[in-house]
Amino acid sequence: MVAIVLLWLFIAGCRQDMQDQPKYIPLRESDFFGDMRSERPLPVGVVAQGHLNEDTYLYTGKINGALGNVFPFPITEQDMKRGQQRYTIYCTPCHSPLGDGNGTVVQRGYKRPPAYTDPKVLQAPVGHYFDVMTNGYGAMPDYAAQVSAQDRWRIAAYIRALQLSQHATLADVPPEQRNKLAESTPMNMQLGNTPPEQVEHPAERGQAK
Image (spheres, rainbow, N blue to C red):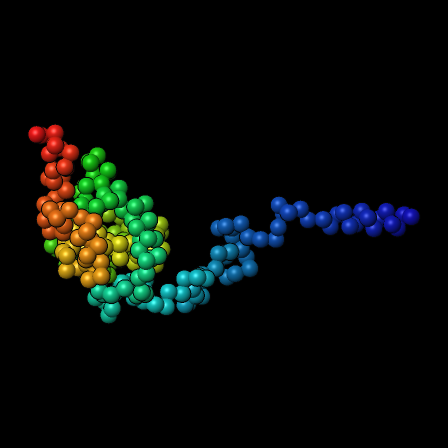
């Protein structure tokens, strides 16, 4: 009986609480290594899991150091919708929903960015937009931490759509859609004609009489 009690006392004395773990506290000295540091430098060439980034163009927007003008993957309708969503969240405060640079924070005093329809911006390769979102430019901070590389390309695609929407002509509409557009749009509001705000509503004409 005495032996059993002694055995239980021995086992209880060997208990190790969870808060007392055999580990190094950050920056604590260690005499195991010659430099006395418990933090060890990473091996040369090590890559964090999920960050191999083999596709250089996908993650830099550059080809041989020059900004590219193609997308690294096909842009689908779902990509455009995702790009619009990310643009609305991260870009509209400065650039506005239209991309004219008159966002809400600009109206409150923040430096105004150029409109996407400015000739210089309009002519920039698509890799430019990706690079600016990745590294920042001027007063604009980078968004690499907030927006994934794939979503940065999707935002760039949506920016291209914004630019096209404000410079589109009837020739840009697919032939099979032109008749539908003509049927659903008053003649003086069709692409390239009188702006909507200058169009007189039929009810207003009646009131004027």
